[in-house]
Image: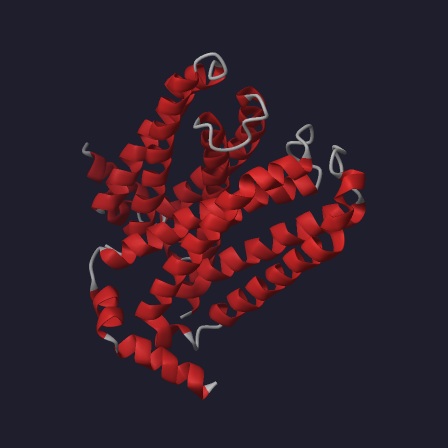
Amino acid sequence: MSALYDFAQFLYDSDFGTALRESQYAFPVVEGVHLLGLAFSVGLLAIVDLRLAGVLLRDEPLLYVMSQLRPFIFGGFVLTFASGFLLFWALSIKLLPNPAFPVKFVFILLAGANFLWFELGVAPGAADWATRPVPPVEVRAAGWTSLFLWSVVMMAGRLIPYLG
Amino acid sequence: MTILGILHWVQDTSFGIALRKSNYLVGATFQLIHIAGFVLLLASVTLINLRLLGLALMGQAPARIIGAGNILFGTGLAAAVLSGTLIFLSGPVRYYSNEFFQLKMLLLTAAVLFQASLFRTVSRRAAERPLAGKAVAIVSLLLWFGVGISGRIIGFI
């Protein structure tokens, strides 16, 4: 734990971290980019999740929707994580005691675990259900679970300034 | 009566006072609904415009993607506007004086009007006229992303 605090203190004290924290426009613009990254990552993923859940785009083949949106979702996550790291660089030591911050990361890990479970455990059987308007229950469950977990991540992130 | 005068009056109604004096977690809850609604809206705008730009889902007719996207668009816009109105009413004079709030409202008005008029007409016929579809997609993305970025800046100015 103390290594994490030392690292956070190092980032906080660095020239770049200080400059970003004290800038009038750069910091809010990075916040804005973080939001746009979310539209591609969590936003487009929510559309895939709703297709998995059998709610949206029922008539479009599931695997086609997933493969078409995947590069944009991954690109969105790169943008979200990169801008998120810059925000952490600027605020680092102030974020660690914030209760919303660990919640956010636990739920990111849970969402990652759900993704791995889907990719390794559910997706290999796709030939049986990929063209159905409403997929079988374990696929729908993976979709709803992803939607729920990423919503919690986003909300915990938005609560950071309120609980700090 | 000036706009600022009206906003002062709104701020001092019992509803305005109740909103302003409410627990900070009430305000945080409005912000959560606002961000969730807006991300849903941005996701649908991104989905539809990726198709119009020819970058994704080219195997499907634009009209089908637009139809599905519009359900999310309507839901997201309703949630964002309702929660946004309550956030605004918690401090109308303060928000009105913020230049990025003014920019956001300008872009939002332009985005909604554009989406309801030109975008609607052109995107419907995007299958026959893909170039016009690409043009309205770029404008739509710029307007809605502009709303998002300027909105995010409000709290820091």
